[in-house]
Structure formats: structure tokens, C-alpha cells
Image 1 (cartoon, rainbow, N blue to C red):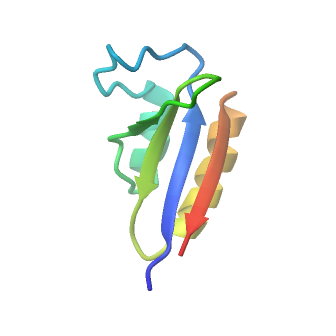
Image 2: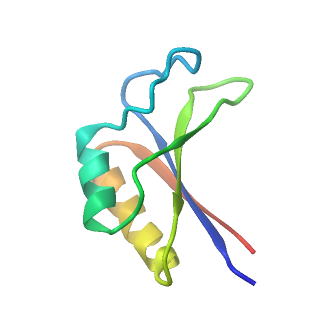
Amino acid sequence: MSTSVVLSVMPSEPIDPDRYMGDVPDDIAAALTAAGQPRSPGLWVPRSGPVRLLFQLSGPDRVVAGQRLVEQVRLMGYEADLSLAP
């Protein structure tokens, strides 16, 4: 069984989900690229609260990469979380 690892990031600028074109802030894109992770996000649109970018992480070290990315992204000033699901 494979573990699903998702990085969730709240961007500094609000996202309108109806007009979102897949843009990722440059600093987050650079961190993902450096970690060898895909930079194409999905969106999480909660009933209340801001829209978040979701990145499905891949590779055999995706859990470790996700933990590092959370730290990096938080140091950049973003709110970030990591979700693990069996």
C-alpha cells in the first residue's frame, strides 16, 4: 500500500477559484522543483476560509520531502501543512 502525501499551502494573495489559471508563487515553485516534486497544484475550496493550493508529492522519499517542504514554505512566510493518508 502506498502513502498519499499532500502539501497544503495558503498563498499570501487570495485565490478566486473561478479565475485560477494554475499559477504558483515563484518561491514555492522553486522549492518544489529543488525537491524534485511536481509544481501543478490542485485547489482546496473550503466552505469558509481561504482557498489553499494542494500539491500531491511523489517519489520514494515523498514523506521526508514533504516534511522539509513544510518547513521551507513556512520559513517563506506561508501557512503550510502536510497530509498523509494510507
